[in-house]
Length: 473
Ligand code: SF4
Image (cartoon, rainbow, N blue to C red):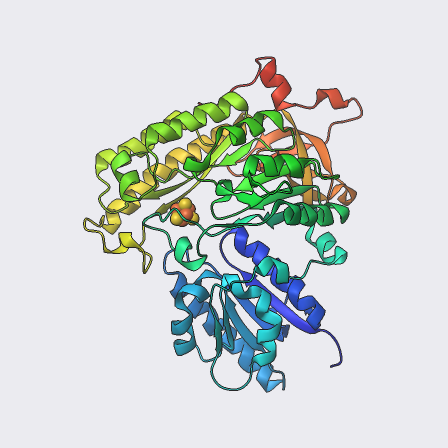
């Protein structure tokens, strides 16, 4: 072998997949695989797939059509390109992929990615290898840790999976079937991973899980720790400045987690809390296990704990049985809460989920019309939230170069992208930025001039305590 083998991973969907893709790269690195940004150069090409969006499997099959052309071009150059499909589509539809796409050499489910090095060695001629079991061993114990160089190359922010799987069984969702039941990683292993990241320059971690606030990992005292306690522990890892967590379920928004937003300055004032619908009959049909008024009470409590918190959510419109008055209840809930950001989708059936066979499917044009109305309202709220940041000075963590020469892009505490003309040496650091322009999806700011002093930074909690900050309720 003359040089490293080249690895290209394309990640679809959520942060869990981004994290898994990085861990796959880390695990394949000791086997001589180095990442390339050019899919045509790959010796191993992995599609890490997501099953959440509409027609997920069909999208992967058309992606595989493009990959076929690359694989054939490599073969003409005398190179073998191995093709793997990983992630939730692999888990849910592995047999179908093996049957329909003969260019695929390897199909690996999310719980088997630690086996990649062994599986790659087994690839030969003929049928694809399919590994979509839920193995008994803990995959995290078998995934290689990233090298310092790999961490540095990925920047100052990192995802850390703390929990996987879900026991909620919302009737529209495939996660309990593709990722299995809830498993939480032990506190000590998460803390060790965060320490390794900060040691290489990471300052912000996002603790991720399909149902992250159901976290109940073994603590060093032998008891199960809730997410709030884990966050408290992560906050004292040297080098950690910012902590986020996602995705949360309203049922698991416990009092101690809400209090953590008040007590831990490192916990960023941003909460993604999916509600899906504002109508109780729809929430019941979705098996969400909470009512709209319970969601509003949580929002109230979170805002009482951290007055400037930015709220984000997920919505599904046109769920089977959703009547016009149910949809109106969703709009009412949105107006009551005032979201800084949100994701909204038309309901689309996922094979194998109970809602797929429900009566009263809502006609497509009705779903489209409702979605347009909801998105108009959510967009208006997002613009209003961004506008309210005008003139404020926010701490921005600079992540990468912007689109214009000399420009950097960073993130505000509220997760808004902020564009600033600034020296590249600021990448990986946090600096105060005065917001001078607010677009629909991002902010534009300036570094304060020499007159700036650290006491001029807009510290939301201090302003809130002084009674000077607006909320969005
Ligand atoms: S709580 Fe979230 S991950 Fe779990 S079943 Fe419901 S939508 Fe899916």
